[in-house]
Image (cartoon, rainbow, N blue to C red; front, side):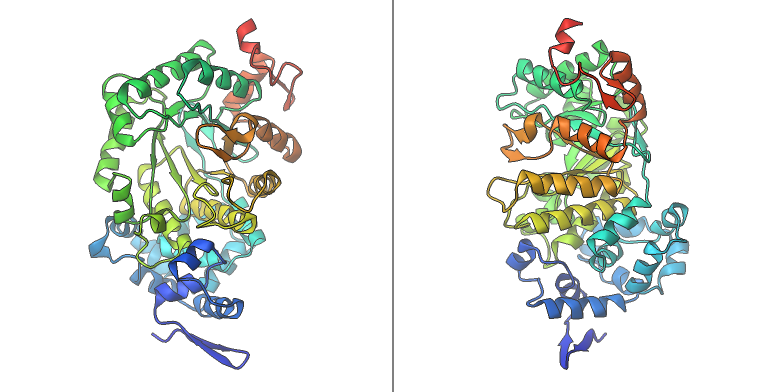
Length: 455
């Protein structure tokens, strides 16, 4: 297949689909590091012009890693609805973009077509979209899930209460939880990144968070973001697990660097359906981020965005309650500055929603990135406008354990009031019953962690 075009009197030719996809991507420092980025803006436009004319069937025939060499490819391709695929395989990527953005295209239309997509198709159409296109198209798509409460309904914005502590101190974590709850954070999950990944420590934190949820009758779920194998041990030992967590990557080799494979995650999913204490049926929590495969030298020469899309194609296998792109956490080697972080956040959210996942975002940055708190707040506003399911809630937006900056407890409250959004329905009723929320706004009692000590 000839992949060539001419712009301004100069011919551009791309050797294969992998090169074309890499050079059609928005500028990313990780793609430059990997040597797959376009050399000039004109070459990038030429790649997009060629990509727009490419039939979707070509993308299915050219996955990032061949079917017989990679279980992620197999999991994605085996899930394709062949009848739907036959209807859309002749569409070009440009046709697909126009269809997604058309006023006549409804959520029901998108839900039907997604069954015939592969991750490479999702990645390709994303490369042709502007930031506003990504917001507009994602806004059309609502993806809900249920654990102890319901996430993703239109008009809602949830917040993960992230009470990380540099020594896993139960007293310190409890204080952070009370402060977060007082600000209306925690409806997505009370989720702790542990310092100590041992079974005893993880079980202790699960017991403590579950006791708080049970004592205050909070309609939410808990999670300790240890390695999935530790959580599996904890479930079998009787610890109260709300959601089962794991980071995922877009190739078999990259997932091996995380110590996981599809078979292990199938086992974890089955255990979660058996042991997780919420009603469910959605019991899994995944985190992703552009650059993870490249950092493990497991990207197979493909660009960050395509490898990220493959994570979403894999994640839907386990019907998660929530998926979170930790968009700026991996560092400036992969997303250099606020412009690249913003673009990646909008891309990831759109790709996840198009794939059928209940997407949230950790709008964040590391301290050596070219970004500021204002940049992250800007991204949060854009994503909230796009219908993002949830953000992180960290004391003052400064995670003292993971040493990065993200959104705070009170940012979610400000976004809700600014954009006329509400907490998850069950959680909103609880906040009103507690006297922390009235008519969608925090009361004067809100924000004070000692509120829970006075009750």
